[in-house]
Figure: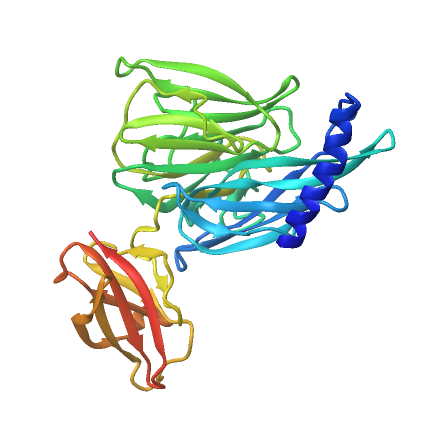
Length: 396
């Protein structure tokens, strides 16, 4: 770090001072610097994810400083200086922002210059969607994407087990299209309990993705401030834009790309249950990388780790669901556990021998935490080899 700082200072003095003395201005454009994030999203069985990145820049460029900031303004990852790539692991679901700078040296008309290019870029880490129902659609190219593969019905569809009954949340996806001239993908707004009949002309609220000769876009069909009256609004998009449907309180808004700015606010508020339902018109129309803050309801199991992480898992109702990746005693299928307050590990609030949830067929366990008051806790588990594993969790 000291070497890079000295290098920065010397180049600034030599080249910066020469520009001042001779009244020269930079005649050339500053080289382009691009940060490319890669997100490994959380899943129903591991509620944390990773964000890696690589930076494309001219030879000799280096990171002066770079941090990953969470939604509360805290530092989730500090890359420091030096290399143009890195990875932040064990991140909870939410929006993050890369903030920092890259030092770039370049030559123009025989003179050397140095500049600092700022990095300020948002990235979203969500939960991969689990499809609980599919009609004329298959998961492709991964389990949390889907595309139409048959036409036995007018509209293909998928519906998620992910959902929320109330509260804030967001859904993110992008659309992919087949080779026809009439491609349509619909994200329904609200909760869909069946993939029965669907018609865009019926009284449904949705985001319609379309591919047109004049460019791609989305069209919103939404209920106006007068219940039962519907209107539409069109918004242009780039081909690879991700679209987010965001709910804050009872307000629904639309975001696109890497910007957290609102491009449209739906006039009708909604605070009821939501899940993820997508309908498609043509073969190969589909939705790509569908993630959200919606949990998988009864299917979320948190992974225990050998080291205590900073991420907190939220218990589902009065049940703490967790799993152990390492081997346990196959004959007894049990684990010894202790539960402590996060700020005081001297008093055990729960203890005992936890029986494996055999019905799941693997290393998953369901622990009743109904006797705990609301707050932050630490689960400590010991297997038959006397190895310890940990999990931070919240009881609401």
